Length: 337
Ligand code: TRP
Image (tube, rainbow, N blue to C red; front, side, top):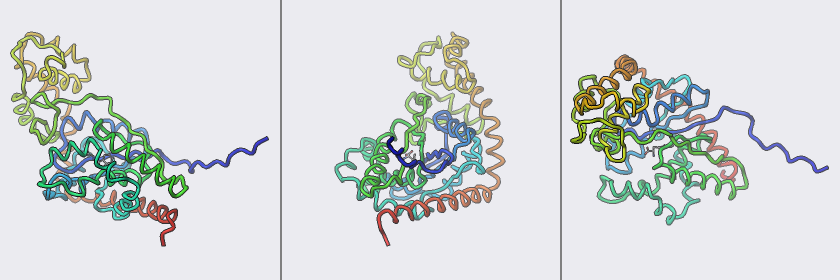
């Protein structure tokens, strides 16, 4: 009888999930329904959740990160308000984790310049960049993102469609590293695509801070009303849910439906001939109602900047411990002194 292969599985540990955001401004409803809710659900299932605040990545498309520490703290504020629990999740800024950044060097040696040049998301970001010239950081940031993911040996990475090329590169880097150094040190992470389709902003295009069409989570009820009152609709008074033909109207209907956990067709039918004014009043009330507990928590948390800072400090300490351990392993298999 053949001898069974030795069990090479790692000792059982909690599934690790890593994802993150650039600290460029307040989170909005698109983030909330697209990813935040899902992160909180994942956290509740008992996974070991890491959230990276990608403060170096901010420098890829602008020359200066504007008040980075303040933005990082505000991101922590939005996370905590949405239900991220610092006892269960590790929130950190990648600039505060030197060992994570050092992984960039061996990882860069595993990818070709041509490969970096083909990345469709980077190409797109270069096209929209606020820099006069494309920096080396812009070109290499997907490799940095691989370090964000591999330093903690994440199993799962919840991301949007646009991040898939980076995840594929991360898997390639893990595979090549393991092949080159004959090891199984770096697991290949899986993408976890959100099943919530894109949330549209008040102009009928993708909700995004930079387009100025977003409703921030931290907006007051009056600001929310004002933003939604200015939303783009169309000339047809009868409200229907038809995302293809009526993106503006349907985006608002869907937002109300998400907030009320209802079917968008039912929401549209109820408004019927009430027209855009009725629709906007309905959405405003639905959003304000749904966000009220989150906003109450957020207002309370916002008064204690020291607490936000302490959450970040603790997260950075834990991320550093994990990154130091991984870097030591990486250096050992590479035979570094
Ligand atoms: N690149 C992501 C964005 O632009 C942010 C990010 C940085 C990230 N590092 C990550 C996401 C690691 C997932 C995993 O939104």
